[in-house]
Length: 168
Image 1 (cartoon, rainbow, N blue to C red):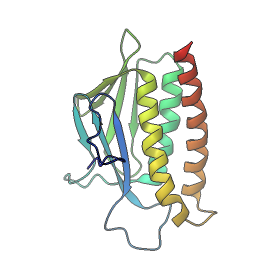
Image 2 (cartoon, helix red, strand yellow):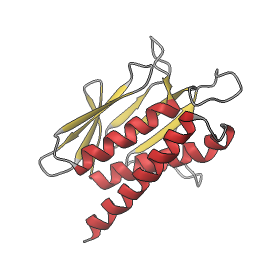
Image 3 (cartoon, rainbow, N blue to C red):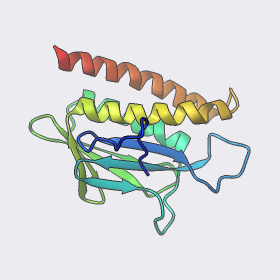
């Protein structure tokens, strides 16, 4: 579920988000294709795969909801944020601790507890990996493609700003 980019076992210290198109999606690719979210943290894992009822989501539309909502949450003062997937009952919640760290929660179980910058970077890395492999397959004018490209750009700028603030 979580292959490492360099062949080594992925670190258990930082969260990891992986996004994919469902294997049973018929061609041609579309911004409305169903897919999955896999999350691994320092306390467990959660996935939209292999659940009953099926919890595949419109992945190209769900990713912008996750990134846009997480950006607003991490830059604001709310204590929690729950992202819901499009056309799925799968959801992940994020809860801000007193010390500013963020708990990632699925179905009431904490799967990660990390600094905000680590969480944001993990989401960005997973989204970039997905986009790099999947966006070229979509037509240039596909609405799902356009939404994901815009959200990925805005979230990337936010993560860079967040990381700069951590170093100061």
